[in-house]
Amino acid sequence: MNRRAHTTNQAFFEQNTDLKLGLVSVSFRKHSFQQIIDTAAACKLECIEWGSDVHAQCSDIDRLHAIARAQKAAGLFCCSYGTYFKLGETPLDTLCQYIEAAKILGTDTLRLWCGTKSTDLYSQSETEQLIAECRQAARIAEQAGVMLCLECHRNTYTETKEGALRLMEAVGSAAFGMYWQPNQGRSIEENIEYAALLAPYTKHIHVFQWKGEERYPLEQGIDEWRRYLDAIGGKHTLLLEFMPDNLITTLKSEAQALFKIAGR
Image 1 (cartoon, one colour):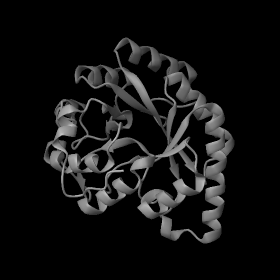
Image 2: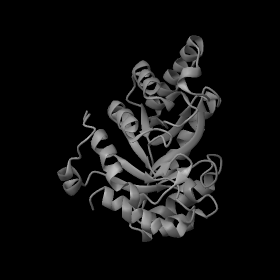
Image 3: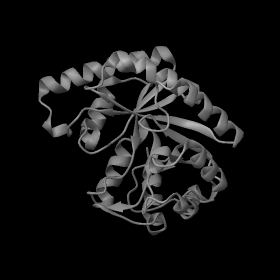
């Protein structure tokens, strides 16, 4: 694991071809799945994380198959299924339905949330109960041949690096990992510490340039993002999440900045 926080390995970005580049469909909830596919392909992105809330509901089998056909025709693939399944809240017996939806879309990776509040707000008994459920979910994933990845989102158990690491170590399953994204309320150095610590467990990365509640073009964060990726290292998928102005037409410039970050 690379823990360097103040230097960037320029050669890594100049030569690296292991980074897959895509977007998260929830960036464009008001647009159809075909519009998202067409725009992503035009911007030369490679993959899409389909969200279960609007575009790819797990119960809509016909639509899931339609998305799978359309993305294949456009030369794209589904890198992950972005569910809003919350461990500790959503009934665990519905997880299999999300797993089947992911497989229809062509991915073996599902994004989940863990818990409903920040790490520090959990009592010991609540933590033990949540970990037990996570272990059970991991076993389901192992049997199904998929991987569950938790988003390090605010107001969830994995909001803090300490909580996320504790959970990863407690579950101890190759089918149970992490996403990573910077916390817009924390400093670059704090985010680098989180990124480096959770690097061995991180599969996909959500990419945006926010400071507090303000959104900025990704172009302004290229050097910052290279520091993040240098701290994480390895093969990952970088997914644009939300535009600074919420416009699908902005995807072109954001994708161009993403390519610069990846050294392409």
